[in-house]
Length: 56
Image 1 (cartoon, one colour):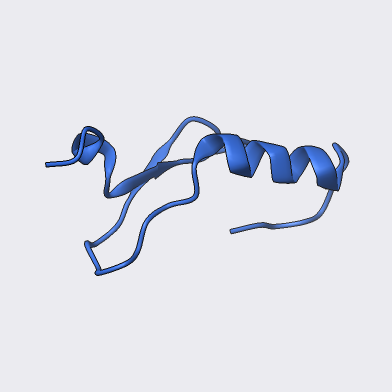
Image 2 (cartoon, rainbow, N blue to C red):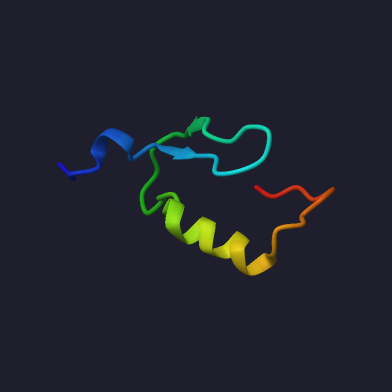
């Protein structure tokens, strides 16, 4: 069992109105969520003003 198996089928929303909520998804071979640190870095590169934009 992986040391992170408790959280393996969920991803935390890191910004916007739904910040902090967790999404649960079905198990699938080879599927894993992008780590929080990578998502945060991506949005830092994009800039802080994403007014009117939606990202999934």
